[in-house]
Length: 282
Length: 338
Image (cartoon, rainbow over all chains, first blue to last red; front, side):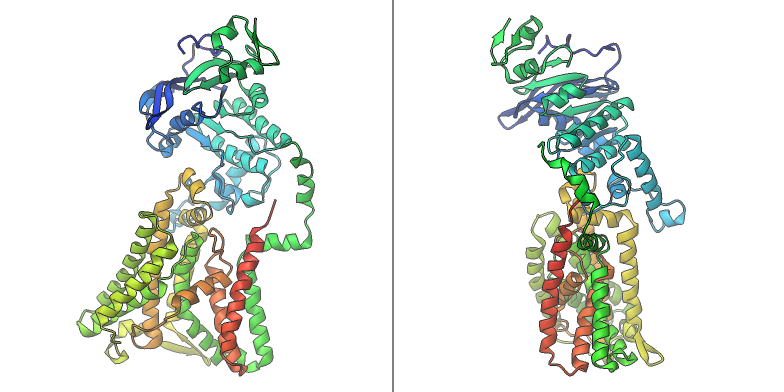
């Protein structure tokens, strides 16, 4: 694990990572979920996290988003040590997570979903005494938040989310994260439930997040998607970090080989490659 | 994975008229009970024009008012995908504490009234704590507290009623009536109207209202979105309890006395009003306007059938059919697709 750093280094590696995790450990009884994992997320990059089932992807992400509290290890956000006890702590610090289940409310409209638990009240006594919501203001800002991300398929912010397609729902969840995630956006399997066309729309969304300068952590099982949008790829294997590669330094086959343990990162760096039959050659 | 998206956008744009109706009903759940109420009123006044007269309309309002008030609390709880079987028991308990303290123990009327409201609120809090802290299903919690609250009331009152003559004026205030022409109206109606306005406002205009819908629709997503789901759920039961306390006050005025055996069917009648009013038993959809219409529909049947000279058992039959039709329509509306 200590030999991994060089290849995966961000081009501008003199900059401080936005998010830096060191030695994260998380156990569940006798099961080791994370065994001293490091993670670096640099400004403006898309960092993919890949790994087989049970490799510790979800556990890692949950530790970053406050859904789990690591047993040991440190987290730094923009160079300052932070610790999250609840998801709300991470959210308050500027880390927004789009869960695989999306966590949108089908019966509520798009604007209500974007502002859920962050509702804005009217100014004056209507807001402070009667606690009236600023519905129009939230609608307008929701509309421009969606437009900022180039989401054209949804125009009416008063449309109930349950009337939207899977890709549109994903877009609503991503727009919410982008609107409030001031520092980091974490996307958990955003294309898993989508068809080809809708997946491409979500990948375009991820690219527009990067253009806005928001760093993204993308968890995905879909290797072509990862190789299409990621700047760097963090490979989880057996509760640890097997390595960090880039789509330029490694082929998809090599990445999968490292992920499954058919090849180590060192081997891949010394010109070892995997044949289509899955055999290691030099 | 590769086949789905091609046909979808076309299907979304071209809706059949039926789908359009479904969509409108979906976004405005009070429309179906409104149409039904108008139909009911029209049909019964065609059968017998006396139905539309001021006396029978004011009877309709007077007879609806207590159930309509209880049904506001029931609506809140059903919006969170719960159910409250203890409504009647809570209201009777609140009423008997107020009435008995004021008439038998010399407690000042205002204090007795406030204690009644507090008893209702506390009972709601008990239900809410059992649902949110012990994680019991609302059906079981309120089935249990239905018996418990009833037993407490009977033990406290030893089964005795409080006669109207012994009640202080404040507790009877909701029964005061005045006439607009031949239309008689009680102050209790205004109290209940205020409850509807307040809860309707809170549900549609405040963050709390949105959170109630969100928790009812999908509690886990609501939690992940940053809503304190359990706190919202608890607040719903507490507010419902307070509303049952207010309903108890209205009930004293309406019946002119306080009997521990009053409104025996309040739980079923309030659920009926909510369901006919278009609020979904699955939570997250509906509102108090529909509930008011639902309560009026049930009473219209009662009065309309009796004016038409039809056996009252047909009312029971009609209400039963209505409930089943209302829930079926709700199922159909909820099947709305992108």
